[in-house]
Image 1 (cartoon, one colour):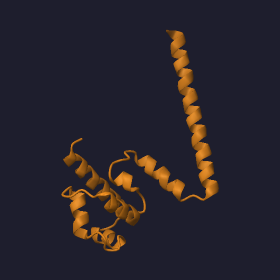
Image 2 (cartoon, rainbow, N blue to C red; image 1 turned 30 degrees about the horizontal axis):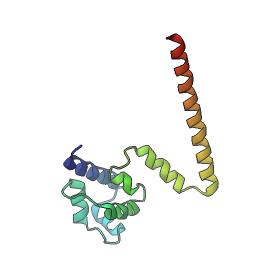
Image 3 (cartoon, rainbow, N blue to C red; image 1 turned 90 degrees about the horizontal axis):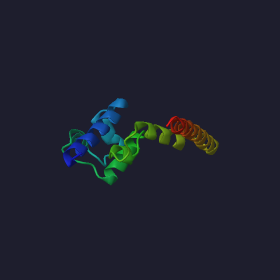
Image 4 (cartoon, one colour; image 1 turned 30 degrees about the vertical axis):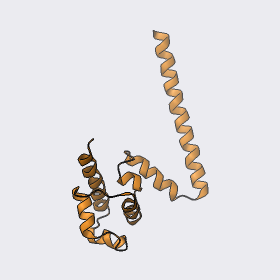
Length: 124
């Protein structure tokens, strides 16, 4: 992906998150405490400008649903961001439970692959 495509993809992610919350650019600007103007947000969404680390942090906090890494296309999976938000919004007991469940799923998934690999080797 070249630089222009990345800038456009970053803008598309910002637009999608803003629209998912049914926010206007003015409302999102207000949520940033005026740190980012409606015009600047528009420039990001249109791919005219690329937001930096600080701007992605400000927008992430204003949106409250995504990380700066997600906005900057450093995380590709939306599911990762959903899990992250669920984890951060849980109490310590909920967090421990989420980790335990994730480990069980991972181990079961690994066991399935190991069994299928062993079966394939036996057939060879």
